[in-house]
Image (tube, rainbow, N blue to C red; front, top):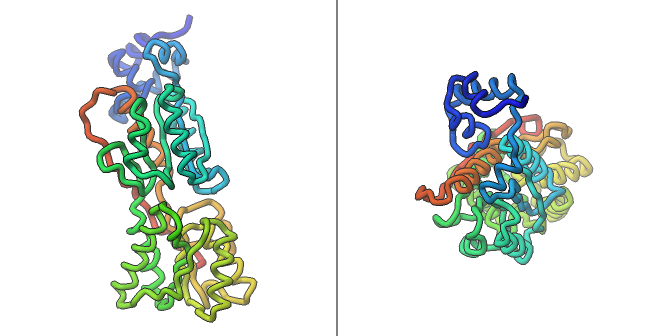
Length: 335
């Protein structure tokens, strides 16, 4: 005979409500209690009837994840962590790509009005906060990244300006004085690059250096090819830096590739720092110094925000603005 909630509760020494909260993830439970309940669930082999539970509650058990680029290592790693964390809540994740296009973001938000998903996590590059939240009032929306929702939705983000400041400061304190920035995107509404440029400028000014426009190289996208093209332009223009802060690890890897081809020694002649903490950077030659956002915490906090809204739709708790920690990981490219 299959075990029941009350069997698990009796074994764990808690109420059936506590067991239900652990199973659904709908309410935060003390870690010690959660571990005890999970051990009882495992021992008894309890498996919730997710479909029946969702049907009774008028939910689908599906959540949406809308990211700009499926092929991006950063977003690929983040999506995998969201799926992993969602499985712990017996949720299925439906993933779609927006390519940073306003119409695509709008289409996904409008689609939630039909209750195809119980909630949506979106990393917006095109739409403003009012449009993002106004389009999808039928389901909870959690924003990832720099778009501030102005109290209209939960947001989970990294402090991009601070991360860029720390990356640039690391290069400056090592004695570098001509630090280039690869990654500004003035042609986009996406504010990530804008905030990272702000952090870069802050670090320079604090070190008594004026930003040099000749050392700032805009890019069309944030990939290896763009980093390679930006480094080629820097070297061909004769504005050779002694260090590079690239706004993403992919940009840094592309730029380092060109530096190697042109006979530039890394880090002796030119040091490199990226941002995103993708796995490729660890295996680059030399390994890439990078600022690593806690991607697992991004996934878990975004899902917790969704759970709070899904299971307590009438809650008066104001939308949260969650800032996720990051860490500078120093490797051979700047040592």
